[in-house]
Image (cartoon, rainbow, N blue to C red; front, side):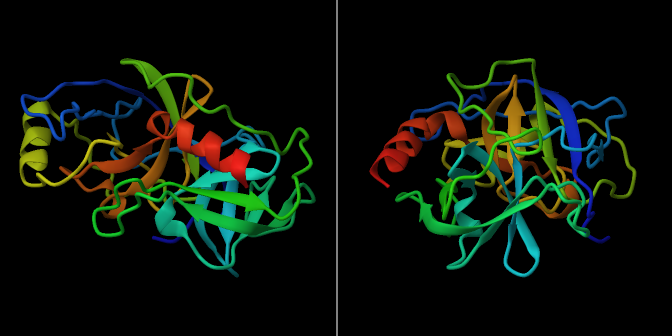
Length: 247
């Protein structure tokens, strides 16, 4: 499969379950994806510019997604760090110039100080743009969370990833997820667990208009039995605010 040039979206409801074990004194959030057709990897092309906070990170090619949270700041994943990044805003089809784009170099790429490249804990990064973006109908910001996501809340993930796998249909269950967790006792809980579109590291998970997740990692095409992982943005709002103020 190849990277899709058009912006795609997947809408689903997440449900929270507390397991019978706790890591570092905090309950992990376990999430299940339910779409209309229950496909593991799936989505639809977004109406043009209906996700105006979505950005593409470019280094001569699209390599990660991100979210515009102010006219001069973008949130992405720390593992997307490069010494030079061009942020592309107002994009829909990244393969063509549509006249709505703003291409702005990143002036500062600031990874969370607790980022761990081994287990990808605290996998979140701020990018300060070299100049403010011009906000318009094609380029808008997304709100930071005022709370953590609620059970049964509608969430949307978007990006330029693949939108189909082998077409198999299945639903995760609690027992399967417990087994997955027990094999990975060193994971920490600044994370959310979902299934996702492939190929959109750093991209947004938005619930009720608030940025609740940043795509961190997952197995190819959200393989059966393997969730994809998002940095839980509600745990990082203080760091985000203080970093923006001091830079």
